[in-house]
Image (tube, rainbow, N blue to C red; front, side, top):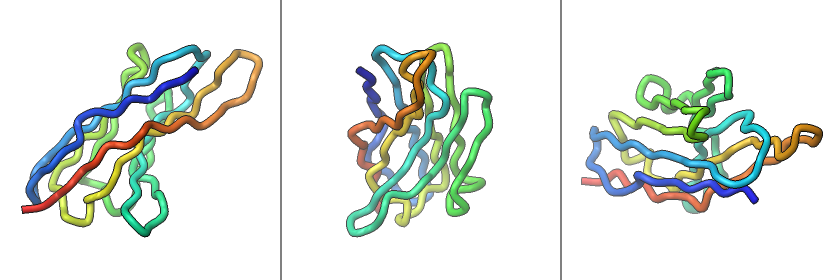
Amino acid sequence: QVQLVESGGGLVQPGGSLRVSCAASGSFYRISAMGWYRQAPGKQRELVARITSDGITNYADSVKGRFTISRDNAKNTASLQMNSLKSEDTSVYYCNALVRTTAWGGSKDYWGQGTQVTVSS
């Protein structure tokens, strides 16, 4: 019913930049928030950045000052601009959306399939 499609992942050198985007599609009432999480092998999934429909943002301490999340509510998209990338940023990045499927129902979390970001020289 609700699909999240990520794009923009790839290989980048340390200190470089990359922009990943997420587009939501399907049948739903409202997207309350969208965000990016990452999960490296052997580690738990962690929050990278999140933004609400009102524009309130939240960042992990490790990416503050380097990453910027933005959204376009009309297009149901969210993008993450990643600058000054480090090898520690290498991970699979997952798009997340908190979605209210109907006007009378509650909200549910949806996840994208993930996109690989590799920072290496």
